[in-house]
Length: 276
Image (tube, rainbow, N blue to C red; front, side, top):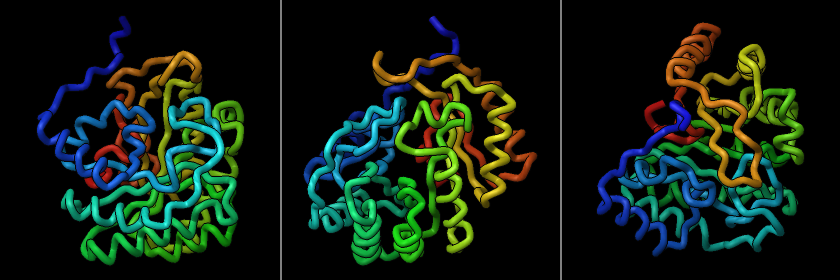
């Protein structure tokens, strides 16, 4: 057994059921369930979740991700209201809102993001919102819609290093992700955040180079976590990193200029996002 393979403590089952019931009753999707996140029971016990809009079927097929892939569902026009209601019932003061990729839509789903933010703010006026977005193929019209929401934080995951990106994310690209993040930086006053997975076959130098690339386009917050293979058909884990490695890489990230860094075996892009 690998000594670095993580263990997750079982939190209060009553709080978990409380959160799950609200999500189920409001017919709200979460990346927690769709992506088989190892932290979902912990987050549910804190009465929080990362809401996922635009359905639960992604039009892309990244080799690390457990979200279903295929033809996207029709846009649910009632979804913004249900999401806003679920957030109110959970009593959240900080929200991470993400989506599947929707390359089949004319604006890649950007206007639906904006509709959700509007409804959420209407029902929860004091809430702070972090949008964890797709790359929208770096389409300026779509990115402008996202920027216009005026949310506190804009996030897009770089995911992996340049050498591995085309293989791991065949329908995206390393450069498009950087362009998306740079557009957010130049056209909004939001905090800009990104995330990396380790264990896909990258080298230490490649990790540092990727962090420098993110800094160069204005990313100030970074999450770094261990890739965990969702199933045998997904990309193999090439390496398990130790807690000490994640601690050290956090210090290196801060030393080269990031303002805030979450780094650990079970860290995910939206894990404890409010604290970051």
